[in-house]
Image (cartoon, rainbow, N blue to C red; front, side):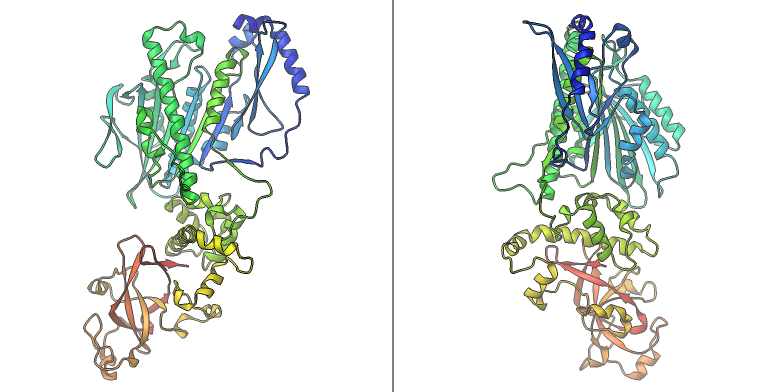
Amino acid sequence: MDQFYLDNAALYRTMVKALNNTTPAPRTNEVATETTSPHMVVSARIRPLLDEDVAAGFPCAVFPRAAQAGVIDIHDLYNHPRGRPILKSSRYRVDRLFDSQTTTEEIYHNLVVDLVPFAWNGGIGTLFAYGQTGSGKTFTVSQLEKLVATSLMGESLEGQRQVYMTIIDLAGNSAFDLLNSRKPISILEDSFGVTQLAGANEHLVQDRDEMMDLIERAASFRRTAPTLKNDASSRSHAICRIRIKNPSNDSDGLLYLIDLAGSEAARDVAVHGADRMRETREINMSLSVLKDCIRGKVESDALAFSGGPKPKQKKPRVPFRQSALTKVLKHVFDPAGSQACKTVVIACVNPSLADVGPSKNTLRYAEMLRVLVPTVINRMEPNPTVPVAWTNVQVRDWITKNSGIPPIWPAVLAPTELGAQLLRLPAAEFESRCLKTPGVSAEQAKAFRSKLWQTHIDSQRAGDSLNRTESNPGESAEPDTMLGRLGPTSRLSSRDLDPTGTTVPFKERIRPGMVVSWNQRPGRGLALGVPDDLKLAVVLCPAEAVQGTVKDALGKEVNATESERTHATVNGADSGARYLCALMTPGLMAEAYELNLWRQIVIDVGMMEKEVILEYDAATRYYYISV
């Protein structure tokens, strides 16, 4: 076949030139009717022609389409039995496309750079590179590893972290530690269902130079073998795992950089023995399982955000136990996983006409990884009460109106994120962005993230009610209007019904039902079963309004005489208006509170620090701080 291409190279160039001059303009609605998952980016990198291809006379067969981003044309020459050769063209599409002039540094800054802070803040970032042997996978991954080391070990990321590195090699179902002289290791699941690399060394990295030394040491132990296309073809999957530990909250972020084994052309396989044939089958099987896992995870995430599968609709299957590769990456693909994930795939393509068959297979595989979500050009505006459907404009508008005082900067919290992407941000990353707004406290940042998630959960729970409302043109679907129809007994927030009341200092408008934070001498709160850092209470009534002899949670009389109050120690607070309040105590869930009406205490106005807005969640039966 190579000789056929060489004999007709001049004819091929003439036919391709004529074809490119008559290529029709792209349809205007083609890009607008397809979107893919925001957490899964499939790209392709076309490497330059090799010197041996040029010297042999093979022309280029892979052409990025300039008028359409992400579209690739491959022109093959077909030896027609009844006449002269004809041109057969194939079209493929990816999310991002990098031509032969693009440097690895440009690919890093356009595609990979976001994975580093994502993993730094508790997410799981994964990079795969795959393609035909000799297509530049190992070169691409090794260069990206060096750029990741520079970003990760520099001083541009906020906070203190501990960085650990493990690099392993997978050959079929066998695994080896590349940082321990290729010592065999085992891939096992512990009693909690977490995959463990038993026997692999995990190295604590102190600086960039040490990380680079580990990368180079691992490369020297990588399994390779000669093929017709590459004297040192990768015959195994190399997995570089970087674990980023946050000592402040004992959480881990993960960053995977994976150089997959190279596939081979038919002419390569023909000269191999039984062992190499078995090895090739194992590689192909693991790549097939990987494709099924990636698609299944993306489809599962899409279903989760859309409210779950419809009746009689099957949940996507994620077969991560069918190969050693996907078993190692179980927590990347597991739909039940709690960590946010972002995945980047780089399909490396040989542009030579001699490799047109493998190049087609590589791009077909890339297209199978893209999970398309069809949309309608003239679609209705996304529902303003459903965060997962928000556009970036709606996200920013909601942040401005609902983030409290001072308002959080929407351009910093959500520079490009859609509603679904904002919900997927790890808590540490979300709160870190909020804190970049001057005057915003950690308490406000946590409360605002809680409010976003409560809005999302309420939108899923109230989907049927909203649909019924939308079917009646005479009714509005706005939440405030719905609350108004249900009446005041359905109030789920301690917020003042009078919107103008917030302009008055809270101590001048104390009312029954108001929630306040209050202070007391350190250690006294422990006697009440509440932490010292944040004590909350609900105002019930003025202490003077209590009839009879009533004692609070500390055993003191609520309606004590004036002389007793004068001699009482009130933590340095000014004596004055006193209110009987019910204690709020921490719930079993994080950042949740429960109301203890039977545990009461008298609080002077001078002990009150500020008003706190609480919202009640019927599903968990807890109260959460809002903004």
